[in-house]
Image 1 (cartoon, rainbow, N blue to C red):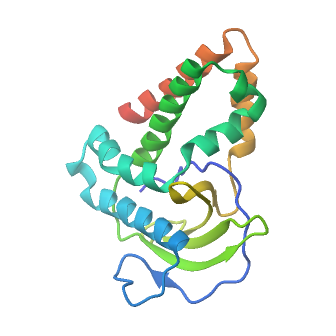
Image 2 (cartoon, rainbow, N blue to C red; image 1 turned 45 degrees about the horizontal axis):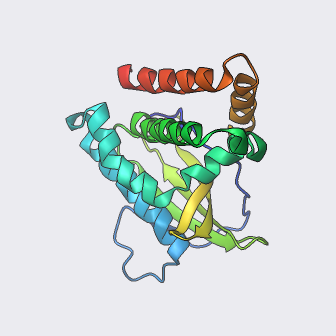
Image 3 (cartoon, rainbow, N blue to C red; image 1 turned 45 degrees about the vertical axis):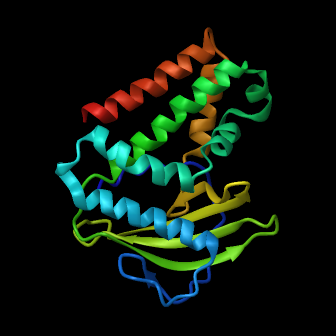
Length: 212
């Protein structure tokens, strides 16, 4: 497991924790909400990928995780939030399609790079609560027993859409790179040949993950 976890948007933080539930073991006896199940199922896929370790190449790990990511994440909502509604609607259909494809590949590659080995890590469910807008925040902890940083707290923000509950927003220990990424993407887009430059930069990051 790599601690350089990339998160996408800042989530609300619920200070009140309830009884922990470890998703690395069976939770069949629990009353599970749909939003919580989306998160715990996705985390189970991450743990499964980590346990396979070096038996999976980077490309194979991407392929292994892609379905779980696409079913649990609203990547399009995250992307539109980052680039901004005005800029998004200014793109042509072809540009929106290409950027969505490249950004999706980047998200998948990020997970495949960071969740690549297993050293007894486990996700522990902590709590969930609804927001004033009707979204859900699911909090969990990733225990990392063989590391100086022995845990990471994740807050997953989910919104219900036509596909069901999906993650559109994640914070790790209350910290997100939304502002940095939004600033970076919009700065690039405002420059000369901005769209093509952004595509090239994202693809370069994917290549760097692949070669690491």
